[in-house]
Length: 209
Image (cartoon, rainbow, N blue to C red; front, side, top):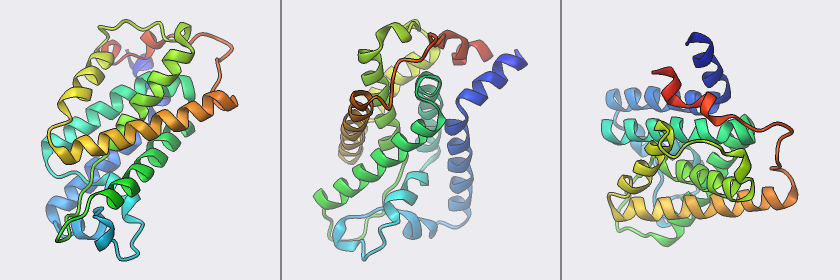
């Protein structure tokens, strides 16, 4: 079991490391709540040139439910897509889609006062979109069972994460950019069929319980 768990960690290291950072930032936020105003995203009329917020906001979570849900969702989608596209592409798609989604959100949504938002769900929805594009393009490479625990987690996450209008918009933007960027990568050959079939069941979360 230890060997299998080590393999899962190795293939899913990006999701694991991001989850650890999320937890650390959440603990810091609980101690120093003012970190919200330093790192959170906001509408364009309050951005004041602090464009770094479109990246740092991904690490903020506003409650234990928000944090745990995103950590579980990220680990689940990471175990599905990371073995296929690799660690660095997983990291790239997460941040570039979350960044573009954050910029779009800031332009479209305006507020009368600063409303510093955050969360990793835009990037997670982008990775779900990447997984969908790869599955449609290379279906023979995804021989995982639909009732696998990480697949079920993603299905549940996809629906219950949309608990407010702001979340819906964030997820739509993240998912849309994930579709666009992964489609470009597939068409250009930056994502292609590996020499050997990926046995996703060997990386399933259910094998380590």
